[in-house]
Length: 65
Image 1 (cartoon, rainbow, N blue to C red):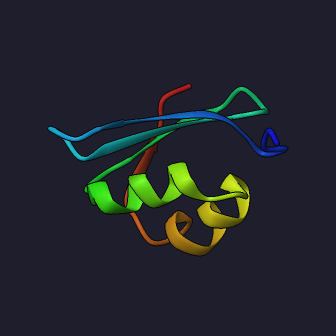
Image 2: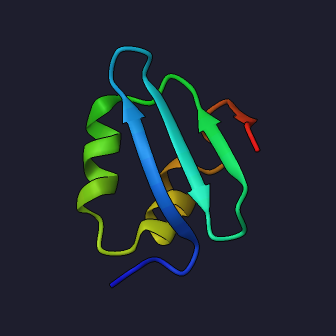
């Protein structure tokens, strides 16, 4: 089932950066995210709930768009 909050996300293991595009069109980059966390997000049945529980307010980020 598609997320109602997150349109897509991409993880770069070399830089440990997680880019998240929200359905609003905003894109944020989260820094120093462990690869295991990105893997867990891929496997999560609810990407939005996972984001709120595991990423939001826990990792440094920058708005890209």
